[in-house]
Amino acid sequence: MNLEEQIKLIVENNGLKLYDIVTTKEHDRNIFRVIVTSKDGVNLDKCADISRLISPLLDIEAPMNGIYNLEVSSPGIERKLKKKEHFIASVGELVKIKNYETEIFKGELLNADNEKVVVKTEFGEEEISYDNILSAATYFEW
Image (cartoon, rainbow, N blue to C red; front, side, top):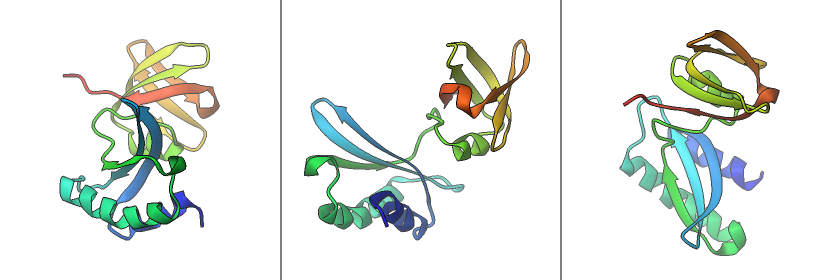
């Protein structure tokens, strides 16, 4: 079982769902970010619990050459959509999708299945296959 599968098991055994694992560098610090979701929401206590459970695992299988800060958080209201599951779970929300031709589609995500997404834009409904999506994220109109 690889590190991501082990983290997913810990997260799911605590009633949450693993949304993503991101490794990044911010202000000269390596960040190992575990992003979790729940239908009931994610609060600070849940994040702290997951962090305490994952930390010993990372002591054994240290990511990022062992020099990192662990962060456990929710994806937030505006979040990147990378996996089909992310799109499917975001149906009904506002999304911004850029395809490989650098066209941008903004609007309500009407449908998402295993092949494509359908976005209702100001110009009508647009079907976009996953293999043509360069980047995507939800957004919130303030």
